[in-house]
Image (cartoon, rainbow, N blue to C red; front, side, top):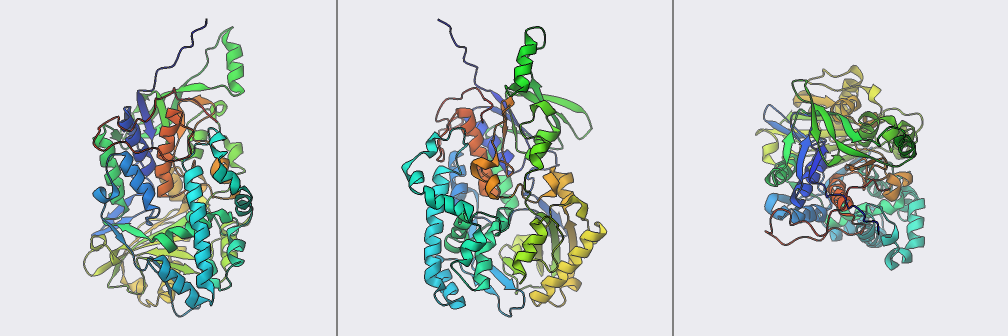
Length: 563
């Protein structure tokens, strides 16, 4: 009888990228018992969830919405703690404010579902009852997505063949095929309501005119559950997860730029040629570690049993692997749809800005045309633009010096690095700074702050080219591949290389998708892959205080390539 050799479980892992995904992945793997090292290109961890400080201001440079709190709660529980223990969370009321082009009065989205039902009724007779039904549907679809899709690696489709999925099959198919915009338009007539319900598509890096209506589930998050804010900003979230990782023994090396994923390929030679030929048709090599350069420019090697790339997937595949080992080569990306690029402004402003809430959205009248300029075949920068303003100093006194306000502005633009890079005090590329001037003038007019430009004491701009330079972002996209139908759920791709055993992927450009909660789930999916866990639900939470290795609910299998 032939005895099958069982590969030894992995003992060491290297994680490429020290953003929230890389930190969370490393923390979970270390708690599982692996020796883990993070290699981060920048001088500090954080990635997109970064921070920038100047003249007493503390700016979050990326995500600023705390949604899906139960996902954060679950991650912290896996780490033996809780969000309540680690963060000081406050609920925003209003959750956010909306300024509509040409409208005198803003619309404030309240902190509770009941209040928002009343609000919608005041905007359109009968809309309150319709919103109740809309949110009931959003809750149902959200619960289904969370139970069967978000926490799945899709390594096997058998766990999806459940009665609750099959029962909803026809409805799910309809929601996947109908765009969010028409789904909303079939229920509400007031253009303000249509825009409020359609805008969550932007959180998914997409347009309401192409995003599947299944994503109406997003409205549960802001209209029913409410919007939270971690005091100290989102940099506090990064520091907390980094501390949890290091407490588990994770080593974080910054100023470390990974240049190559090292692999062991099938042996050459008379017998090996056949194996190599088969390998090039799909059988896998094995990841053995990475090469990286440090701040002194030295090239170093780090060996590992498992390599997890939390970097941009396009960069990982096309820059860190040879062509014959790429699961997603350049030809694959030619048919992908990027999310929007972004023009970002970090502004320190003298005096108060009461017309802006903690979160304020500015919506233009030419809604469809606005999105068409960003996502259409012939792209251009919308002017005026639908945009987002965050004023954390409305809630957090540490965000700005006394007597000043902290303003972060995000303008969705085409994912086009040729738009340029930003800079300090008007020192960015000319086109970026002209766009920034126009945006400041727009906010000044719409929010009735006539002297806004004169009150700015700190100004920093960021453009799509900065996302390429700093984050290796594909096409300068702000978020990652858009959540259109062919790039959602199992269509988004795998979180494991099909050609390199022991090479896994995490982050917004792979499963399950865009956003901080998705990034935390993505970290958990790496652990599921290594365990060979094909379940669709979140991992069980271990007993508190059981120490390192307590997260282990099964046995590791050798890290395979998967589908």
